Length: 261
Image (cartoon, rainbow, N blue to C red; front, side, top):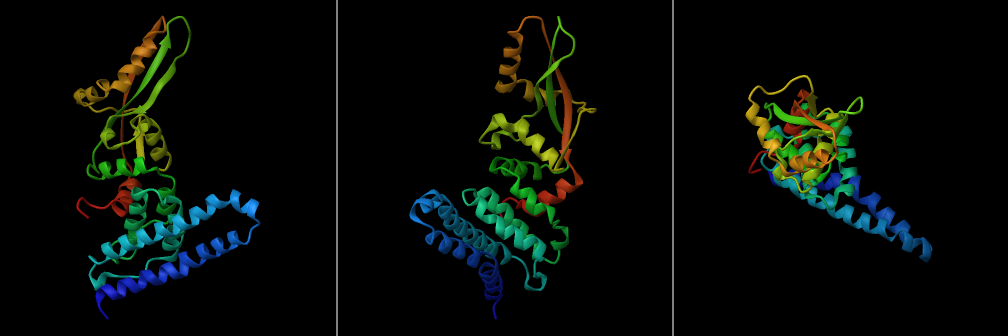
């Protein structure tokens, strides 16, 4: 039996055993619901159809990627990785970026050289990412051992005690890769929550020039200008750093493809 046929058969069986029957049964169940309720639930029927298409596209990507693995390196992926990963493909039917992460993770899990680097938590982490965050992680993988600049902007009213944060964890690192650039602070918060990156508020990069790109950013400038419209404001940028954690480095190695793959 040829290498291609063996791999194709493996993923066809996975699709039939895990994905297809459940989706069909949901679709058949919806067809038995009274018309009025069926109208309300029609969007879920659309989800079923689109979810099936998502699985098909991902499995096609897996076949192509796995064809580059030598036959002797192929191994069966662990059920605790492959089953939840394929089950979750239905939720990212409109995101090629997230499907790509699942495909890379599954291919990594069927290569004997890499399968033991695949942590079961990675499946749930992908589920908690936006397509923008997936694009941003592609940038970070290309700079996997780097330390990056980020800042907070604090405002203190001179006639009052205390201060408030106008921005937290703002950076321009990889921001050109994003569709929603103004959400970069939330992306850093989320990736820190998931232990993919570490934000260190007690350290900064000695080369002050790396922060200049942040200070020139229109979003930063607009935030500062708006703050100064309030009388008696003192604005202080607090310079910090962030970097991939060891867990995060391993995650991006498993789910982010190299350039050209």
